[in-house]
Length: 132
Image (tube, rainbow, N blue to C red):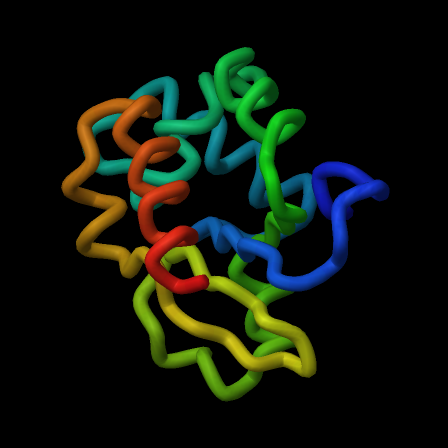
């Protein structure tokens, strides 16, 4: 996906990586998993930011108002673009300062511990400020 707003400077940017792969079959399998066994769904980032069928409106607003560019990648896209990070558990959020230099902001454990979308939004902004 593209950064949240073309007018926003490209770096630094936050890179959100879902613990799910691209493709129609994967989307169908993920949707079924969310519907029939939500307690075992492996991507907390997906749970927080998306319902079963679409993005949560509060998340769409956060993206729209972000002070930095936001990029969203699925696991397979992330591994193709950032091969040095394939061992990192997902989901996760990184800050990309340019030239492919990533700094891990929120690891899988931190994301899995979040209870609400509001917690995710606040934590992203806090970590971004700390990193800058």
